[in-house]
Image (tube, rainbow, N blue to C red; front, side, top):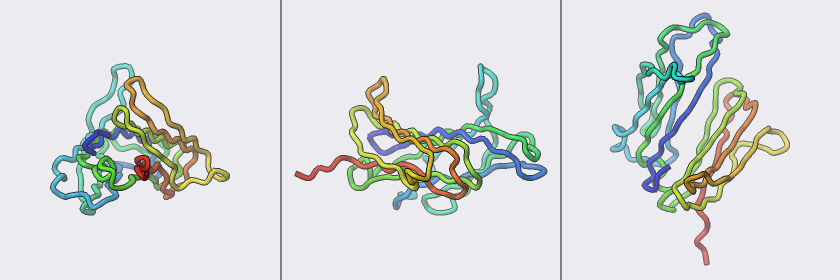
Length: 187
């Protein structure tokens, strides 16, 4: 996240085919406020295969469809179909202008949520804030006595606060994530 509210996201997904032939995968991303449509052309989503020791990292064909004013559906077209029980991993880089603008201006808290159609073995959130920013954060959608998760804060080598949430065995269609807020300015 930058001081002007722009967000750069990196996502990594591993999917397993539960059909005889899987030609594409889809996911959606969005903002949780009345985001100005004028920024739509600035949203950039690039999908690649993972790079391991210099092999891979090639772009995959994608198409996008805005399903709501502030939500885009991305379709990742696989170079070769995968068959039942095979797995495929891809890495997504997203640039979303003004995604967190109300948050960085101190007008409201912000939430980062994810859910999946099937049980997800491990889901990890890492939110890196601008240097010297102090924030408050909580988990969303999780219960300590029921769910397996770890919520931490740290400061990286560049002096940026990193809020981290790792969730294990997340059931399908359950939204979980992080909520960020700036400290109170009340006297």
